[in-house]
Image 1 (cartoon, rainbow, N blue to C red):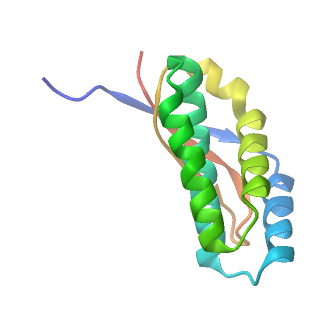
Image 2: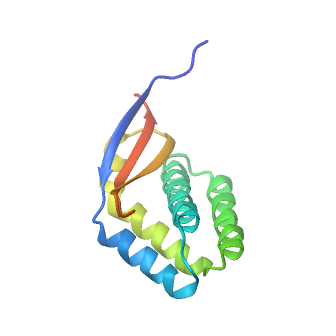
Length: 128
């Protein structure tokens, strides 16, 4: 048996999301690209797990993702409530695009401009 075929889609988000997200983190700690990349990765993981939770109803993975966000936020010295708020905001901003896919997500990656602001997300989903 082979693996399921996948499809990549770009879902744009208003750049003010990342500008505000990173701006708030900058108020909490010194900022470098490792921190920026880490919080963007948390947002990508959250989007994937939140979307797949809605499709499956399985809370375990979403709860695990939230626990990882709490742990990584502590390690990064950033408020976990703040990070979760912006992860949920990103999810809601692209939710209609996610819903149109009508399939589970395999991965989510942030696409940034030269300044590091997120332009959108490439979501890889199973083809249906």
